[in-house]
Every structure is written in C-alpha cells, then in structure tokens.
Image (cartoon, rainbow, N blue to C red; front, side):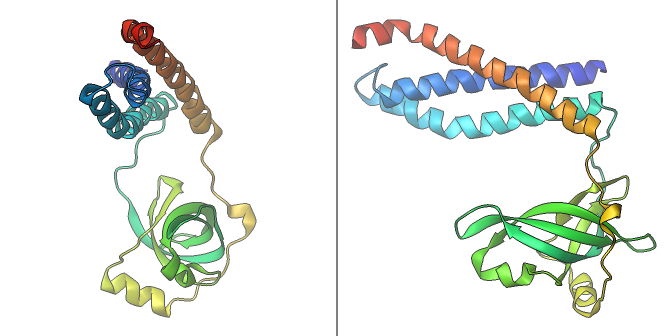
Length: 215
C-alpha cells in the first residue's frame, strides 16, 4: 500500500476509535453517570449526533484504503445508460425503503449485461420499479458492477427511457464485485471494529471516577 493509502487507513482507525469513545460517552451521558444535571444530558445529545457521522467517515476511509490495496481505483466518472428491471425486491421498511434490483444494463455501443443494484424508493413510487420497467442508471465502464439508478434523469434520457425496449441479458453476464475487493473490505472492517472496542475501553477508563461516584 502507498504512503497515502497508509495515511488513509490509520486516520480511518483513529475515527473508529473515536466512535468507541463517543459511544461510551453517550451511554454515560444517557445514564447521567457523568453529571446528574445538564452536563450529562449535553454529553448524550452531542454523542448521539456525532456517532453515525464519525462511523461513516471512519469506515469509508478504511474501505477506501482497502480498495487501493486491492488495486481497484475509485470511481471517477459515471456514465448514463438505460437499464431494464428484471426483478425488484424490497429489503427494508418505511415510507422510504431500500429495493434490490436485478438489472439488464444496456450501455451505448456495448453489449448488455446483468447486475444487482440497490436503491432507495418511496412507497408512492414503487410502481416505477416493477419488473419490465426501463430506468436510467449511472454506470462505470471500468467497474461495471458499480451501477446506481438515477432518480432524476435529464429530459433527454427520460424520453429515451420512455421509448426504449431492452432485451433481457443472460444471467451468465452478471457482473459482480471482484472477490479481492470484497475481501479487502472485510479485512478493513475488522480493525475498525477492534478500534471501536479500544475507544469504548478508553471511554470507560476516562469516566471511571464518575462511574464509581454514581454507585
């Protein structure tokens, strides 16, 4: 891994450690173990708001360094294309939920291929994602498994989608993320989780006196 990749990895670990500290501080604040007054409440509110953002940033950096270690470049340019929905399946709940799509992507000037993609759909728009529908997607020609449904296509692409007819590509053309990338991602997740545990331990030590006095 390059020097830059190492820096990204260690900064990601630092952020994951901070997540552990924030979790411990949030629990302490929620139980009013640090201060039975406003200080404990403030610690809880600050922690509960910081945890998700710190975790996202930390693991994003770890996963990014894992992709570099696997020799896979980050996506720089995504190109629009039309795609046929072969099947769709909700994998979440709520008014805005995740939908798993089996797509036949038909890039201009290139053979069509199958790929799995997940997008967030509002319950009122679910009919637009039923099997057989044509949608506009963004794809990376160099990493064809990277496909994202475009929610607001331009008028030109929306018109093309309304008139297009796309034949289903064989299942054998399914593009999936290379195993070395997935393996690198998992390897980067493990030290991140360990760093969170270390941060949680540090937070317990940091607030130990408050814990003791509370009991």
